Image 1 (spheres, rainbow, N blue to C red):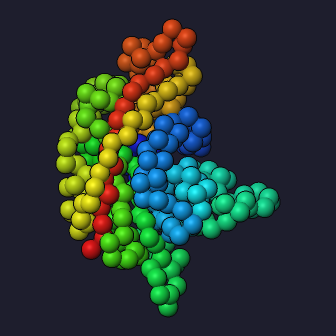
Image 2: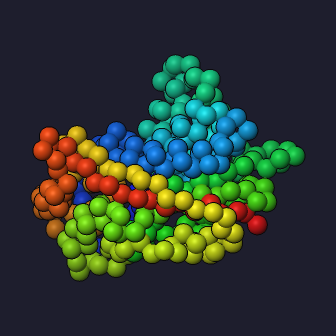
Image 3: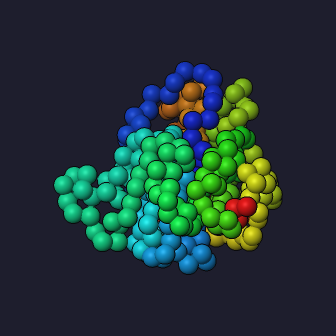
Length: 293
């Protein structure tokens, strides 16, 4: 969704950017992913996630949202087919036995799937009286790049049969540009990526982005909310690394070069750098709760 700030592997032309995917994934997990913690908390609190919750996280990435749900007692399954490096970090976080230690009790009911929602169907016992999942989340925000919701409807449709009728499905999007300071920084990616400007170029979030995705997937909207998720960084280098880890600037780096992207990104961030060197950008994200048919 999820996870990540935008769906990964958007098509673009130009040479491949020379990026170490493992370092990029580590930057995401250690710097950027935590920015959406207030959103995860608000959703879990509203839906009363706890010991009775069986959660399916679509686009789970490096697994912070899953870890938070598991710490509340939920049984969690994460699915991701786009970012194997992030999924490897999720295994480190959620499956401690991977390096020979005993799993904590609060994360014992965890499964991570490198694949599609259909692959997660193996979690369900065909003879069970209850469906496999009582909550589905797609925490990767949409609505800041053209085409960033492409394919999400199909993923949601594949996940729907794994849940009971009326199961909540959570979709997430960027808030209005005037309430998201990061919007001005993301415009750098579009400017540098020209003439690649199409899929992957910045666009302002629209009011009904989430509802349109839900409708295409056959889901029924049933409430929404907005959550403040400021992006805060220790220094400028931290901010640049964090934002680059989202993948939103990959097309720009392919069209120009990484040094140029780093320079212009730092310049765009300068208005948000405070006297102590920290970088602070207020943002608002929106979530939609939809129900399975």
